[in-house]
Image (cartoon, rainbow, N blue to C red):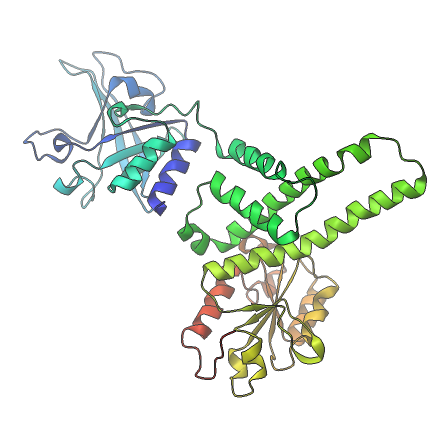
Length: 398
């Protein structure tokens, strides 16, 4: 699925109204017509206005249309009702507008309305994308030039709930953490039509979505696995405590490992070279070592090109563990989901040559004077990629 198709599907699913049709020669002017802009049929008038136009009156409004999730035009929605005219059009796209050329004839035009002033526009020009769009919304090629009926389409939030139920239905006990993490990623990516490019371009957002989805999936599994136990009386206080401890311990162990699994998938998608749990001195095992343990133990491999990353959901006390996990690496990195750390601890981390990596939207929760020292996940990936652009001749693959 192309990135543009993915954006188009999501926009239609989230819109108040949406419409599509094939671009014609009348639109581009190749038939010799002198029409202005894209003609909209009367059956799709609510795409432009809340109320239909009245014969004998003209009306218009200025809107912003974001095209291909890239550039925006200040365009005009018009109803021509005076004289013999009785039609709707979208006009005013500005000079250099790329979709009114002869080559665009036959492309699929899609307009989605979010508010009275904000719209999205897409043009699909590959047959595979057009076919996929039609299949998503159960449209036939001759059913265009009308509003898209999304009432029968499963919304992403509804779809992911169904996918989570489907996943839990395949198990009678908890799957191992890697399988659970993969299941959560698959459910989210499928429900929201996440394309590979989005996974690469927005790692901070995607990671948080995966973590949240896995939490929901884990709750579904808990309700299924422990349903009988919590619905019958406990024979003793000890039995109750034992069950409570089992639930709590499973929650704690899952959270940390799932974060590592999601980070590993993000790194693999971005084609970074890394090893999980590589053995260093004294049988220490950092969560991630870039590029790998063989390079780490090869003293000819430059230490400056070795990167160590720990992963901890919270790090208020446990961040010091990362400091001793690789003696050859002076500056170490720690990814955490913790929102905000005290100035004193941040200073101690700085003095210990530890750099934090946090989701981009969490950076503002840290003291302002330390925000510039933080990496977001995208920045960390970029830094690693730059070091790995030309791996040294002493690089040894796993």
